[in-house]
Length: 200
Image 1 (cartoon, rainbow, N blue to C red):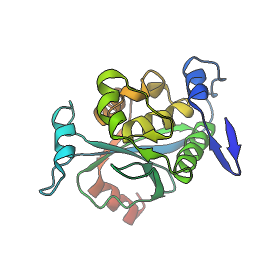
Image 2 (image 1 turned 90 degrees about the horizontal axis):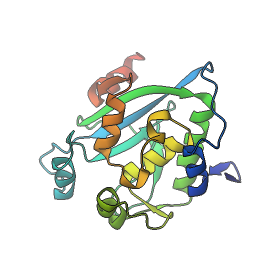
Image 3 (image 1 turned 90 degrees about the vertical axis):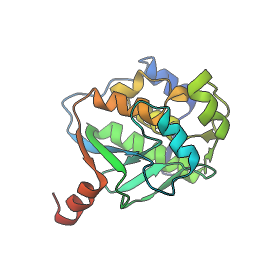
Image 4 (image 1 turned 135 degrees about the horizontal axis):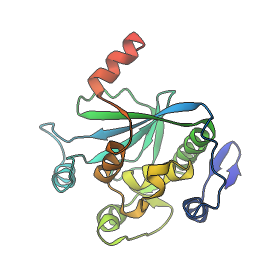
């Protein structure tokens, strides 16, 4: 893992090493920090057709996923854009949010990886989004799509359920499937905003 200034940038080799167990395990007795994955259901009247197609062929009718950190910074990537790392309000009622905790060292690795990808302006790839889940297309490490990016970020932090996934084949629905298999707190974005307002 290389450090550019204050940014940690993980290579695919390092992700693969972590998946193979070459990195030391994080102690289970360390206090956890909250991490959230935000899944979008394209149910609005003006949703782009591609979002509806992606959701329609998935098990859980979701078309997009983002990581939300404990300081309310969020990271992901939209079509034809670059990875973003910025505050998000989740005012759209069609986001469903699942919260879980990770050890502090894992949280820092995931946070720095997401911030680093945004600062490097990692681009969106239509080819990887369409061909990755279907045939495992890898493409360039300078390109990504939302669920590949989120999965890789979680793998950098050694999150157990993500370590069993092939990031190139990951979809928002497959991530949600993994999240459903572990103990999480789930709420929609309306409840999330109420929680922010009242500090619950």
